[in-house]
Amino acid sequence: MTGLTNYVSAGVLWLGLLVRTPDLVRHRRDPYLWAICAVLGLAGLCFVLGAAPTVGAVNHLSGVPNLAAPMTYVAITAYGAASQVLVVHWRGGPRVRRTARRWILAYTGVGVGIAVLFALGDAPVERRTDLDTYYANTPYLSEMILLYLLAHLVAVGSTAVSALRWAREVSGPLRAGMTALGLGALCGCGYSGAKLVAVTARWSGRDWTGLGSSVSPALAGLGALLTVAGVLTPLAWPRLARWRAARRTYARLEPLERELDDLLTRRSLRLPYPRWASPATRLVWRRTSIHNGLSHLDGYLDRSLYDETLDAALRLTADSGRATATAWAAVIVAAAREEALAGRGQRVLVGDSGAPPAEGADTARTAAWFPQWGFEPDELARIADALDGEPLARGAGTPAGAVKSATKEGSSRE
Image: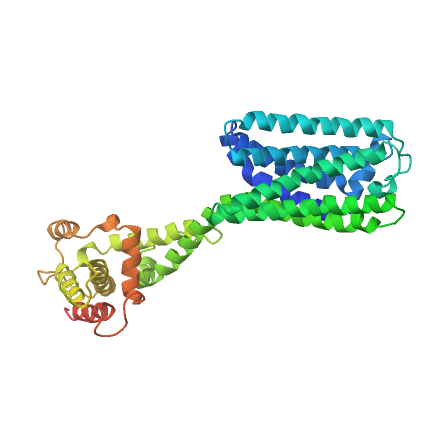
């Protein structure tokens, strides 16, 4: 279980990086995307290098005790630089590139300083989890530890202030993302702060190693989750909203598909159900099934029933859209029932002429007013609502009731 928190945190961060990679591929020259991907990638690398099993492996393979420490500190420094560059791009302004370049150069200097101080110091005893406090009083190594902790604290502190300040100026998913990112940076401040407290305690002779070996990793792990949430929320929110709308529309169309179920089943008009597909794909499947069913009802549609139901619905509601949907619902229900009777060998009289539709002429006449594949998605949803009676008051004296009474009238024309 040693290092599990580190590896899980790294996995979460790199999963976020994987999600953003397609955007980076499409927009290779976008420095903002590069900064986001650098923050996610380097933060994950920090967790991997800081895990005790990784520390032991690096030290063993290199033959240098504690070599993993400066490597981890340099990765943390690079993460700090990436965070600062990301903040610079958020702020914008005429000197974005120059300011970003200065931060990169400054933290490159910090990384070089860490490497030089480690080379000058002496760390013969391998320490996988508490090197900060163990060598807090060792010449050069104490300066190295202090340098990386202060550099990291400045970086994440600046990120937290900028993100939370910007969150108050925006709204919606961007505000949620900036808030999560700012809170994640605050957890990063807690990571550096806890280690600094443990190191200064060692300088005064106290042993607060637990702050650096237990509290700091926990704060870093929480910060990783919040950082990923902050980066991905503005991207994922619109997709989630589209999926939620697709699920609602899919459920909304169920009454209309249910009314056509017998026809769709008898004539095998449905495609295989996309069980593991996205809500949007399932919505397309249901709309396609409905259109397939409607296309087989051409010869059974009664124009006079449509006009009569439309007039009745308009008298009950001033909403022409509701009235039109109610009229279509009545016509479709009646046509589906008459088609079912015809499919069982029972001839029925339909249409204005009072006779079964003649091939050619009546079909062309019907096509002139029946839109067939021309129903807009919102029109289909309104028709389904009229069948279900949800947006209309239920009862005999309502447009929803008009569907029922008009359907009975259409069925009596046998």
